[in-house]
Image 1 (cartoon, one colour):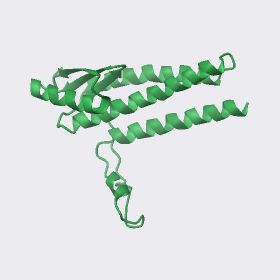
Image 2 (tube, rainbow, N blue to C red):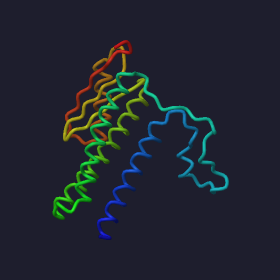
Image 3 (cartoon, rainbow, N blue to C red):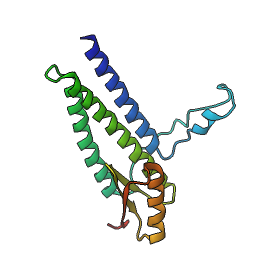
Amino acid sequence: MKVKRRTVWLLTLVSLAAVISVYYVFERDSKLNLMAIFSGDTMQETSLTGTDETTPVQSESHLFEQMRMEMSHQRSQLREQYTQKIGSDQYTAEEKNVAFNDMNALIKQESSEAMLEMLIKSLGYPDAFVRVEDEKVAVTVMSDEISKAQANEIAFIVMSEQGEGVKVTVDFKSNYY
């Protein structure tokens, strides 16, 4: 009984950490200086808090926001299934282990997508939506038009993060949809 509770607590904490990480990755107007953590300053001199002003996290495009919400809904259902499987008495230890590994892979996939979106936005695009599935990465960028050079730059960034063996597709959506 204790092992099952510990497993559920561990999964809950890992899921919570993933959600918090994704929240801070997508928070745009943060005054948080994460590089201060790696500096030689003492903790008294380093302020990790921003201003008291909060801004809602929103996408530039309602289309991109809708795609993110659909993806989030599908993945939350998967997480719920994995959690139920891990906590159930009906499955063997091997099946529970597979479900646990699948949940960790899902968390890793979500983090990878969030990182790629952040990197692509840093190139100057208003918004980006990245979907990683096995060895395929689909990137949708908000832009009126995109040149082959820009698409190649995005593909290069994705391959540098995901590895050389991935197949990258780059699509664009206009601001006017």
